[in-house]
Length: 344
Ligand SMILES: Nc1nc2c(ncn2[C@@H]2O[C@H](COP(=O)(O)OP(=O)(O)OP(=O)(O)O)[C@@H](O)[C@H]2O)c(=O)[nH]1
Ligand SMILES: [Mg+2]
Image 1 (cartoon, helix red, strand yellow):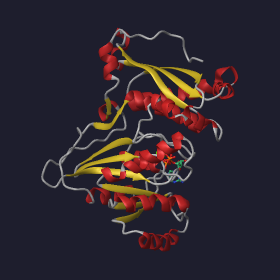
Image 2 (spheres, protein in one colour; image 1 turned 120 degrees about the vertical axis):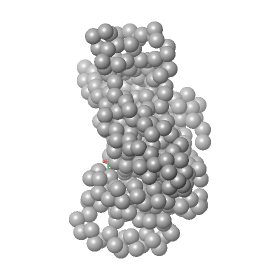
Image 3 (cartoon, rainbow, N blue to C red; image 1 turned 90 degrees about the vertical axis):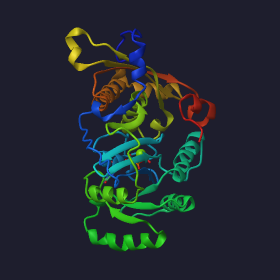
Image 4 (cartoon, rainbow, N blue to C red; image 1 turned 90 degrees about the horizontal axis):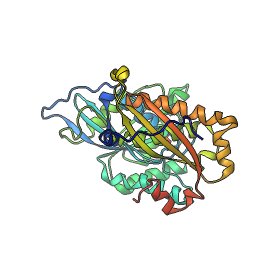
């Protein structure tokens, strides 16, 4: 199934290479990179955003960055790959690493991979931003906290989704019980969707980082390539649009990503990204659902993904999407590796 049938143009390998570079803020619209304080008081460090699935880690990352980078959905286990988000501030640089939610369902190779990816980061960072939901602390939260304690890395807890709590006084005993569970550096109730208390959280995070100069250029947003982000933005549409189980049986691979020289008429828009994406499913029946009646479901998903890509990359995008069946890709380690789920 294809959104359009035009041919790929590989005439400009140098542009294709550029598409593999990490994304910088100058290419985005909502960017607000501020100047660095190069005086001695600058702080810089890595912060893992960690917690059980669905607590709002990726939403919080996007809010802290002031723009959408990580994909989000109401379904657990949306994030499958760690992603770096660089926040450049006057007083330093915060290097956030969003992680897949830590979960109890051990299960198949993909589930094991997700837990390994999340856990392995904890000892490599300066600080953990532990995310939980307001007034909720269940077994999976306890599991995540035990991992933090084991790693011995200092942690700040962000108590998210406070917009759902009408009577904020109820948070006080909850915060008290949290402080008895672990010696957190600080505890900050926030709402990632509303933006409440985000500046306070940012200040607490910055204050907990070591002194140091910026590690990334001030205009850089992430270490991930446009190619990677394109796959993620298409996968986000699958997570958001299709029924409960189906998205977990799919993954996305970018078959080719090239930048085309614009025609003279469109010179001002800059190079256009031409992207061929494959959606892998495990059965023919799943393929039929993804495509939908007369291709309408896939067309809607692809066109929304294309708009999101244009926004993040700051350039025009031409997207073609195909759906293919690859038997049991999510339970086979070799198939996972071939789809970019590397070893940890
Ligand atoms: N009401 C409310 N909902 C929120 C808030 N933050 C996130 N959400 C919602 O919670 C759901 C999960 O958000 P994500 O950011 O994808 O959660 P996550 O922790 O990254 O999930 P995984 O990647 O699966 O581990 C989405 O439907 C968000 O819109 C918040 O502050 N308030
Ligand atoms: Mg996430």
